[in-house]
Amino acid sequence: MFAVVIISLTLFGLSGLLIDSHRRTWREARDSTTLSDADKRFARSMYRRRMQASGAIGMMGAAIGIWPIVDQQAGPWSLLL
Image 1 (cartoon, helix red, strand yellow):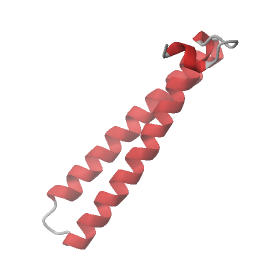
Image 2 (spheres, helix red, strand yellow; image 1 turned 60 degrees about the vertical axis):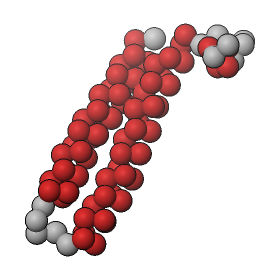
Image 3 (cartoon, one colour; image 1 turned 120 degrees about the horizontal axis):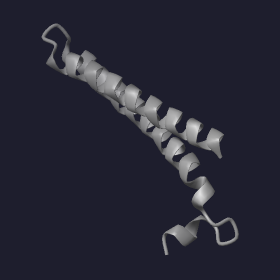
Image 4 (cartoon, one colour; image 1 turned 180 degrees about the horizontal axis):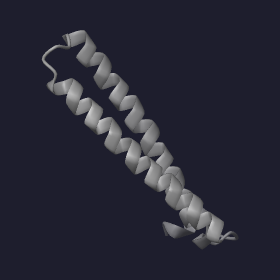
């Protein structure tokens, strides 16, 4: 149980750090006066891909964290009902 909490919090924290890093990089690229429009479009698409991947890492951390509280006989849908 302790390992689940550590892994969950580690993934969730890593996700937060990555998202913060990606947002800072995107803001620098967006506000840059030296980048062309094509470079800014590329930076935006890279930002979107990285945010999706970082969000997925955070979601995995959350899923690992709530797994022990899910009733294994009823399945995960019992939390929604």
